[in-house]
Picture 1 (spheres, one colour):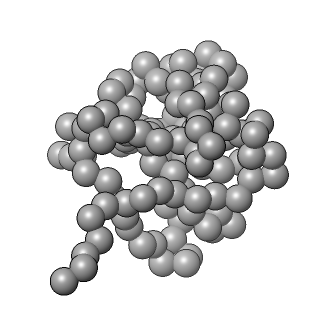
Picture 2 (picture 1 turned 90 degrees about the vertical axis):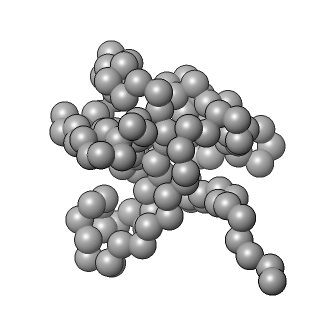
Picture 3 (picture 1 turned 135 degrees about the vertical axis):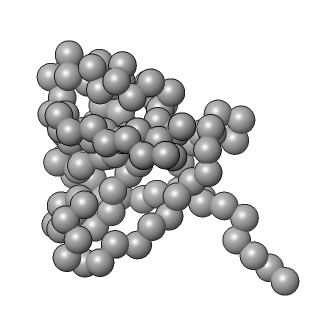
Length: 118
């Protein structure tokens, strides 16, 4: 029987996609190819989560239909790097058994989550 074997990607609308790709490359160190950002399977440190939120949930802005979550190897260093570059970073950081989380806002106003798996 056919089955899903993994997440193929996340897709967001942007006012200026090329500028947003360049911003993510500069600040997060990810580079885009013709189809967007790709992450070789060998670089993944944990499973990929897919979660559905109620339309009125306040975990990310209600006006934002989706939120990106990037896995990082050092949450504090990445957020400190973003702060030093003048990026709007939420001072809140959360820790759970499965990892640590932090958030920033990209130039298009999207709240983005960073996750350092345990």
